[in-house]
Image 1 (cartoon, rainbow, N blue to C red):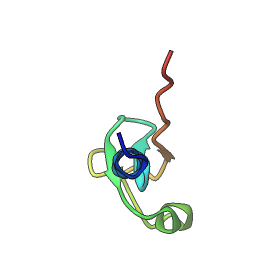
Image 2: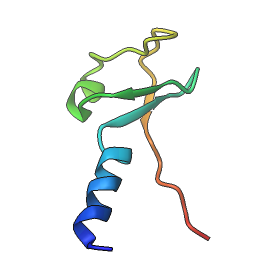
Image 3: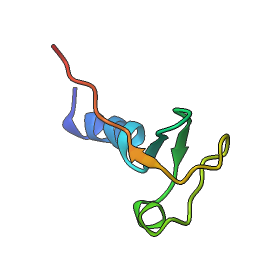
Image 4: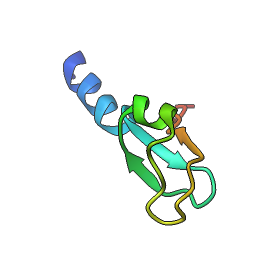
Length: 58
């Protein structure tokens, strides 16, 4: 499989994706807006967001 396809898939799955730390809702937004505190969770209105972690392959 070409490397560009793998990069495109990982970009879609992990880049700009954040998880709410209270209700585990998934949000897609910019890193800059999250760090400035402008983005809230749609479900619980919390501002505690973390980036989606990449899964490890065993």
